Image 1: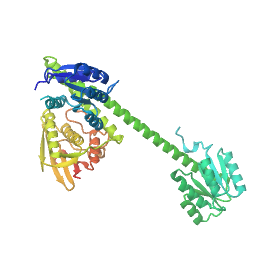
Image 2: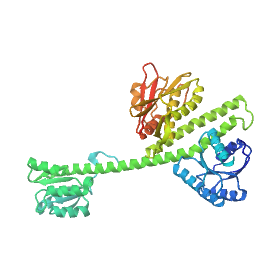
Image 3: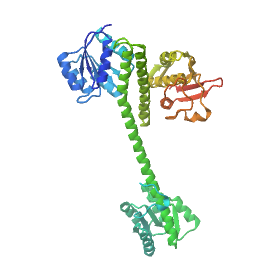
Length: 126
Length: 378
């Protein structure tokens, strides 16, 4: 599988964006766009209509749940994977109800993150 | 609140309610008590005493037994009924110092009695003792409250700190992995060694931070079991598979034997995986290189047990009770300088107990130690 789509990567922490973009590069040659808060994420989404969004939950200005609602309002078919740091089940099920396709815990080993990304992409694009 | 010896506790300003239908008695007692710096209110009957109690909020009651209306013992019972544990201590004043009366008074909830006519010094000494006990109890209660608030704040801080440390650590570990795989270009052996060190250090720090977070969660009473029906043997298989990658680095090997491969039970998969991973990691840590760790899944009368047998030195008999407690590292050390927080087994115990199961450790006479978790099926 080679994924060459457009990905919007949203996280307020630069090291996470660095790490996740290296991970994405292992899936093929995706174009990676970045945003550091939920409000910017919605703007970038409107302008660029990416194929996939990786969305952090805890962010300043507007958090991931707010951004998820905003993006789903613009595009109900958006494919969004939540990046979580706590295994808060309420938040995960809340995000799933709003329309998130999957979630990834950022502190899982990178091979597991890759596997989970591949599965979501395969399920949504092929 | 300054700690001080009981003798030097300042009791001035403590409030005493004197209840007696004899005006002269009230006046004598009140004068003695006021000269000691106590604040005094009085009542001439049991009914009146109950009214005054509410507004005066005494620290101690001096209660005459024989009064018109409800007598002293009944007044005492009523005070106990209304105020329970918070009721002020009651000392009876009684001319009738026959033993059966004293017994009735004490069983009604009184703490002491003063025979009439009383000796001023004796009365003061007894009153002082009971006021001191009362004050110490109040102080103890407030200290316990302060300590438990401080402990809750500590847990909250620990949880927040550990939580915020986790993401950067995971990134350091992940980025080191990318470097190691040559994402940034080819590496010399020396560079590779350095990167491996960064990776291993961030990995072990991540484990420690996770354990701290677990302890904070457990201590604040937020350990929740998200149970579902799962295949326990599959879960162990997965743990053993991953454990063998780690074991390989020490030339060791983990064997798994299951009495049944389809053991479906109700449990929290992530938490039980954590327990088994922890037992496997301990078994590897404390066994010499090139060991075989034996894992088995067996039935017991109420459910299933997972046993992990290592080749380590066993648990010294005098350290046995420390084993499953927080921050308790034993004198036995890992065989290749591995790190531990001393929290792992305490966390395991709490997770297993939250599943209504139990965890045991038994030294094996021929060498090694068996850790066993037993979880009931329903």
